[in-house]
Amino acid sequence: MNRSLTNESVSAVPSVPRELLDALQRSCSPVVIAHVVPDADALGSMLATALAMACEHCRPTVSLPQGSLSQKLAFMVEMACAQVATPAHFADADAFIVLDTAKKDRCNVGPDLRQTNWSAGRPILNIDHHQTNTRFGTVNWIEPHAASTCELVYHLLRTAALPISPTMASLLYAGIQTDTLGCSLPTTTSSSLRAAADLVELGADVGDLGERICRSQRKSEFDLLRIVYDNTRVVCDGQVAYSSASYDEIHEAGCTAADIDDQINVPRSLDGVRLAMLLTEGRKGKTRINFRSSGVVTVTDLAAEFGGGGHAQASGAILDCGLREAIDRVIPRAVEHVKKFAR
Image (tube, rainbow, N blue to C red; front, side, top):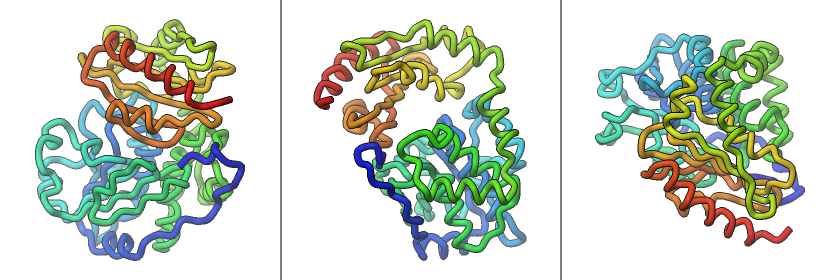
C-alpha cells in the first residue's frame, strides 16, 4: 500500500512467518522466480535469495528465460554468478520461491512452461509487497507496506541468521534504491532507510550501483528515451500525461520489451501531472501499460479495469491489442479516472 494517502510513517519491521522459514530450510533444490520483465527489485530479491540459500545441502537455481533481461540490469546476473534454471531443474525442483510477483501467471518461467502446470503440486513460497497479490502460494508472505521486495528479503535473511555478503548487499540495495527512486517516493519508510544503511555497512557498493543503474545508458537506451520524450502528450488540463513507443520504434532503437521500465518517469516528471502512463508495444499485438500517480490519486482500480494490478500509485497491465487501439481505450478512461479525485 502506498503511504502517500496519509502523513503517517509505517516503519515497523516486517515479521517473517515461521512457516516460511521452515519451508525454506526444508528445500534442497528450489527454483527461484521473479516476475516477467524483471526490474532491479525483482532481480535483486531473486538473486540474493538464491545466493543466501546455496550451501552443501541446497542447490538453488534462478529462472531467467532468454530475452527476459534488460541491457541495463544484466550486470546484476553477472554479479551474482547464479545458475540459471533449465527445464530439468523445474522438473526436479522440490519448491519454487516466487518473489515480487503478484499473480502466478506473471511468473517469469518462459512461454512454454507458462502454458503448463509447472509447479505440479509442489510448494510455492510467495514473497511480495504488491497489495494486489492474489496469494497464490502454499506459503504467502505479503507485506504491502514494504517499499520493496528486496527490503523483505533483507529482513528474511536477518531473521534466519544467514550471512549477507557484499554481493548480496549490493543486489538488495539496488532493489531498495530503484523501487523508492533513490528514497524519494512516499513509500520510503524509516525501516527502508535502516535496511539500506545496514546493507551499505555490509558492503553494498553504492557508487558502482549508481553508476550502472543511473549513469550508464547505452546508445540504444538513450535513443528509446528520446522517442519517449518526443511522444509525450498532456491532456485533462495538464493532470494526465502519457507517452508511447510502438513495436517498430522500440526495435529500431535497438531495444526490446525487456528494456521498458524506467521510461515512465518521463511523463511522470512533468509539473502538475497527477496520473502518468507509458504505453509500449514490446511485442506485436501486446501493449504494456505502466501507471503512476501522485497525491491522493491511486491507480490500482484503473489498472484492474484492464486486467492488471500492483500498488496504489504504481501499477501495470497488458492489453492484447496494438498500440493505437490501446491508446484509444486507455486514455479516455484515465481522464475520467483522475477527475474522480478532488484536488
